[in-house]
Length: 102
Image 1 (cartoon, rainbow, N blue to C red):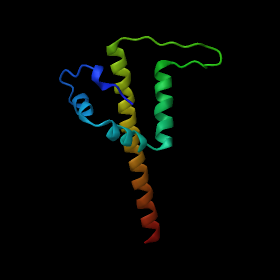
Image 2 (image 1 turned 90 degrees about the vertical axis):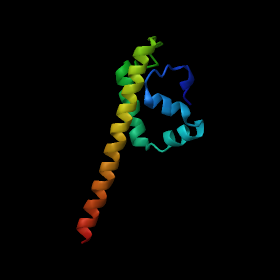
Image 3 (image 1 turned 90 degrees about the horizontal axis):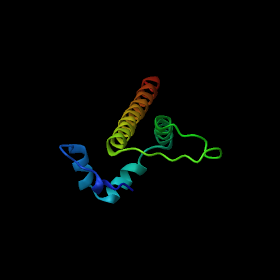
Image 4 (image 1 turned 120 degrees about the vertical axis):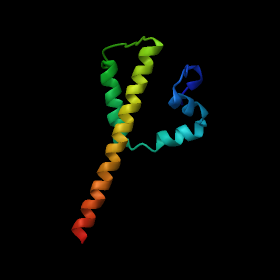
């Protein structure tokens, strides 16, 4: 899924943590994301890199390690934010249902 071994983890605790995880653990976490959250993250990444329609363009993206790390970091932050909002939405829905039943 991810090739984390090639990345330099100079004082990056998150990257060190990710490197210590098994591929099965990473796959399980990735699969736990709802389709709605995946769609939002996918759209965000496409907007960040400026995807053009593949039927009209042969797009190739070239970048350096630092810019790629920034893109990955942005995608991770977006994923974290979306997951937190998804959890908040579920909690809000549960509280709303509970208060109408009481």
